[in-house]
Image 1 (cartoon, rainbow, N blue to C red):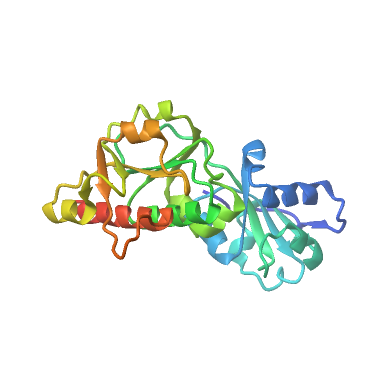
Image 2 (tube, rainbow, N blue to C red):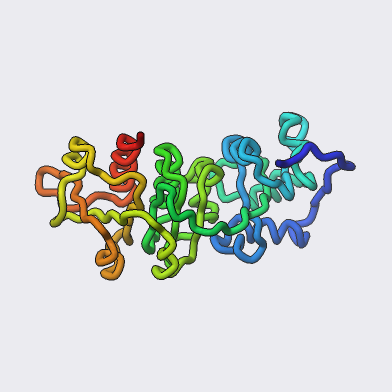
Length: 266
């Protein structure tokens, strides 16, 4: 778990050409840079506190000079290094429209092996970072502890997904860049939603016959699940829709499915 650390005065950055500043800017603004550095960037009190609460390792705590005198001592004593810079320089890092003027560079969790038996959500090439973050947030709230992302899905530790996840990352087992064959260790029934085949989800819940734990399959926003994953599914399930609607936003569909699974949990 992070800190507390005993250190000298914070490192002060004054130049826009500073190498450490450039590295932080790239980490913040490049969605896959974390894969090279094995660190990720978060900012603002909510995400930073969530990282601390879950024991994330903080490499750098970065503050604007204006926020430094007012920031709570909790955030000043958790990183291997504190960094100060002007508001202008901090805003050149920030991806937020209205910056809170402090953030953390955190160590990326080590990639974990797939847990064969825990409640799982499989993302098949989901592209929208907001959708992915919202799905992670729902998964954490509904007790789905493992997210497996097929290669081509939005980068799970990118800034946009982290912000949309609102701290959910720190409660989940996340494995990304997988091939479909990597799913073989899972010892769970695979469930796929379909608009034209299978029993209705609410009927399965009412009968108590929705499998739990299971692995829900969620597909690309436009193309849906790959044909091979559709074939891999042990069960196809429909979500009831009215007034001629044939599809749901994938984050909404995932929320309905995960809530239904939570209801089934003993």
